[in-house]
Amino acid sequence: MEQYIIKGGNPLVGEVEIGGAKNAALAILTAAVMTDEPVLIENVPDVSDTNVLLEAISVIGATVDRIDRHTVRINGSTIGSVSVDYEFIKKIRASYYLLGALLGKYKRAEVPLPGGCNIGSRPIDQHLKGFRALGAKVDILHGAILAQADELKGNHIFLDMVSVGATINIMMAAALAKGNTIIENAAREPHVVDAANFLNSMGANIKGAGTDVIRIRGVEELHGTRYSIVPDMIEAGTYMFAAAATKGDVLIKNVIPKHLEAMTAKLEEIGCDVEEFDDAVRVSATKRLGRTHVKTLPYPGFPTDMQPQISVTLALAEGTSIVTESIFENRFKYADELGRMGGCIKVEGNTAIIDGVEGFTGAQVSAPDLRAGAALAIAGLAAEGYTIVDDIIYIQRGYEDFDGKLRGLGAEIEKVKNETEIQKYKLRVV
Image (cartoon, rainbow, N blue to C red):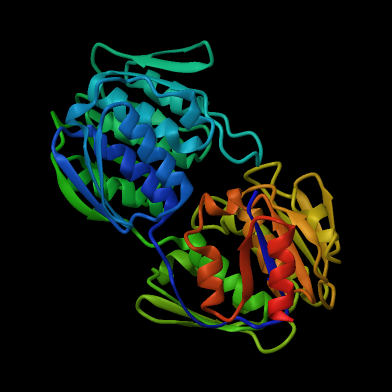
């Protein structure tokens, strides 16, 4: 089992390039099967989540060509099955996008109930409500969702709660439905906008993405396209908080600064200097940071996917901070692990009370999920001594070349597989 070993204490300094957004890629790669013409997708992040999804798409019969590490050509004309294997869905939750894509194109889809990170209850009832509103018959049989329709018809759909997954899934199915669909209380995240822009580049007629009302006029068919995925705001945010926690100075390149505003505002509030450029941000911290309160909210609020990273940063700040998690109930599982490093976080329900400490000390910790794993690595970078992070398979789900990019900023971090490699590393970096 691979681990990261980190020798902390070095401020991160330098430049880092951000890749394509994992969450946008998962929707866009899936939507690419909705045409029988070839689709070329660029800026695809090379992470395990996208690789597993491409394998799932390939297994149902689509032609998947890896042009290079970040470019994929997909042709959905060879699809022979609308049934997705459980092996893929248990690894990545976003395989459920195949429901909307296949239902839209073939009027039938069978996808097992999803897996992914165990960060709390993420029901898919809003997805199913949307499909039913479009005229599909939806059943759950033998652990799988079976959706089918003679034809899909546009409808007025009000989501009971803001859901990125439901918004994208309904949008895909509605793109090939007859008539007009309106999705109200739609998610506004940048990857919703990117998925809509991609579908529009294939000939869909979607307006209002990025607002809470999306209007879709169904079209007969979609065509091939060439499309580049938007930069990953969560990867960018992770390096922004890594710079803050280590008292570093990092230029984060290939970003859309507007997508980062909620994070930028909090970093400035706690005492960081943040400089914005056209497609980059620079984050520097020269002194101990201050306290703040954070509540996670749907975009444009503070992202739940950045909650562990800001919490680790606040655990080193002066004073007491309060972090409220309003999206997922299991998102504080890293608190006990951070306690092993000297952090002081008390969790009560969906709230964490964080008393800042002067510093962390290295320890062996385990990544409970993707974003918490990255946050524990940040803690290790800021800590005195050696930190070993177990279960880094979670981190690799969403961060491309995480250790390599950190080494490029001066971090002492390496991927190891056993105790012998850990001892060799310690001898080398003393």
